[in-house]
Length: 234
Image 1 (cartoon, one colour):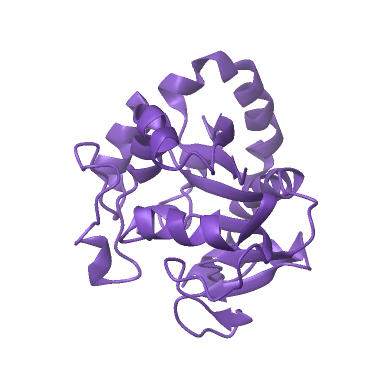
Image 2 (cartoon, helix red, strand yellow):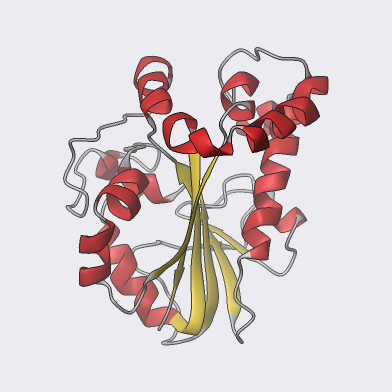
């Protein structure tokens, strides 16, 4: 289904292409592998062919089957962990951070692209999106709901961990500090319909909408639907 939506929605492909390039620009250059966790249909490799595509289950697109909470790599072996729309699906963020801290080389990075809950997007996610969005959930506790299926989730997880409770995150994982946070997707993403909702604008509107988003960037805390978060191993 996701592959069909990808092929049939040019505006979504362009949007993710811009995000993939942004992710690539944040990768560490230290020695080691770049591992994409939860790769899905693995379009990130089109922008960074050296990435190892992995998922929790075997699919035609992945190189390895990997559990993000039990990373099967040696200590300090990995240069980058890339998670695109994956972190909010993890049942235990604490286990992920502990495992990632072990396998990352010094200077290695975790680059996450995630849903963000602004005032506008929180209402839209709650009203129109099929995935759960719960800003009242404990940010670092195991999520029994997410543990029921690889597709179960809490879209508010990144907002809770890296924004609303960033100080607690830093206290608990001082070896993985937040080195960058960006709010994205003010207009284009919600109007594109994403992978499942009806498209509200023509594909030709992509460039004008991108320019409008730049002009509206001061309003990102109010309007943003996505965020980029970068953590670095110290």
